[in-house]
Length: 378
Image (cartoon, rainbow, N blue to C red; front, side, top):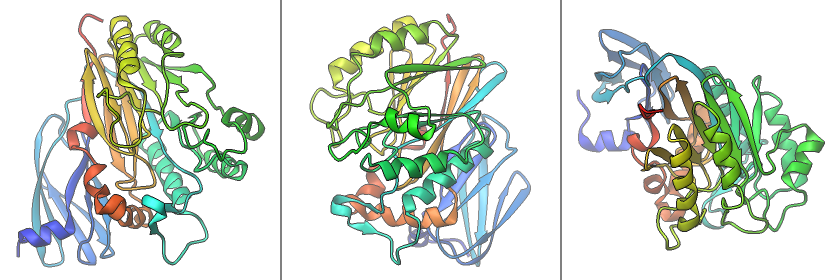
């Protein structure tokens, strides 16, 4: 039988991520047993444990509409997905970002209202970060950027957890500090922890050159404050971006769109953010700026520059971001961390923020996944 609307809502079967040749399906709960997903005459099977899950369908035609038929138990549903057009030109490299890890925090929501029961030996924030990193590398990332709030309170033992976790990653890793890493309760500065523990932690502005793109990383953190700054970094960021064929600019704090205080947490104030984006758009329009901090997903344009925020690894929906660079553009994909243990935790965190987090965080599919061609004149 086909699912009625109430069954579909409870299951929350959806297309969470798309690329040029892949689609990620996710769900909150399906009948335990076997799942079959049929698309284009090909069927993919997976085991379902009755809880949340994820399935990636690959080898799909790019820039095409796909009808996917999902069967689980005696239920059948249809979902539609449109794959992205690849960026112009040949592929050059892939970069992944993870952010707002909050190691080794064990709760979520106002006053830590969402907790794991029974309490596992390892914090869910650590398990989710480990799974996100492994999935990003399997996707093909040649560089991983940790875009801030690596630790929950900037304590030395939390930095040791981070160092052990990042030592498992088989590709280069660069770390940005966030407001939680430099908060009032910190026991060390991030770059001092980096020197001690062998982590590359950005202090100021740094760049990593990869085929076809320069990844520019700027520390926007302010000691003891949630709000960030970019004005003392903007000239260096713009100069580095302008001297490259294209630029992926990575920050911790979001660049605010409105002059008034936004929904918490505050980022880089609107006037300061706009001055930076104006200068970047003039000097290097072949650029994408991505940040974290809000744990939410949003996308906008400032002139010819794309600006995104990407959520956290450890609370709903629980994600990592990928950037596929081509000669003529870049593609962003945001996937949910697919590990079943992590999905169970991130589904639980949906009820945070007065049961509104499941609505506030995800944004739209277009916020998360899109192709950005570089301007033809570049």
